[in-house]
Length: 143
Image 1: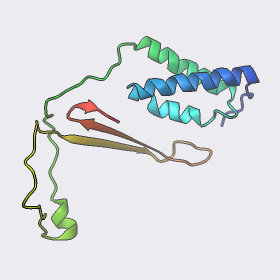
Image 2 (image 1 turned 30 degrees about the horizontal axis):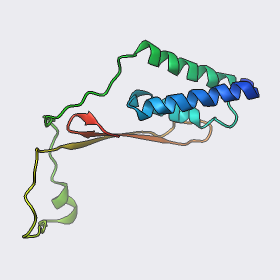
Image 3 (image 1 turned 30 degrees about the vertical axis):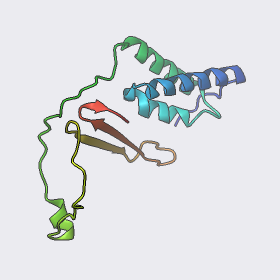
């Protein structure tokens, strides 16, 4: 539990400015700080001194690792994941009905991959959980 003092009005404005700038960094592709920014943005109304120090550390991290970027990959990734027959294990032996007049696909093959992670005790005070997802189109993160 943190017991540092609350910030004054000018420092609160600075903290909120840091959070806004960090949110823009996440929006333009720095997904590596998304969870930290989301956690700190909870304290925008009444931040403490330690929260301001954390945002300064995040900005320092971005300054140290300036070359972080999204790489656009157009090729289909070769993921080696175990294959499970989930459809027949849950619903039995069913088949998908496709329309006879469906158009043929145009363009190249696309693979969508989603990774999910959960931190069930992210906040020890309120017992709130955090769930993060990364969505990839081929090898490029899209969300």
